[in-house]
Image (cartoon, rainbow, N blue to C red; front, top):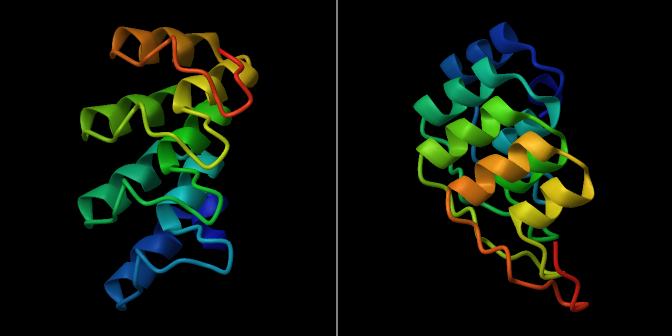
Length: 131
């Protein structure tokens, strides 16, 4: 997991080659794809997807890889996940969507992308707040 967050592509390749379970989660429910979306290395995210990781998984707080990429401002990763058909309107435990994450974190290019991809701009979170 640490190698994914830090973007150590060669180490992750080596671990996968030697049988590492890329869909295994840590105590907080984060998998390799979650940590890669936090770290922001598009090559690593692409490798994990090509190796069959679950891009639809959510951690213990309901956060998906897409939400983490949106919140951390990783536009290329957001584009890749959308191309691979991740749910861009998924709602986590607090009622936040990827669009909420992008708005709260001030990632305007990601906001534009999500809206252009059909995200629901009228959906409030559980506190009744809109984007």
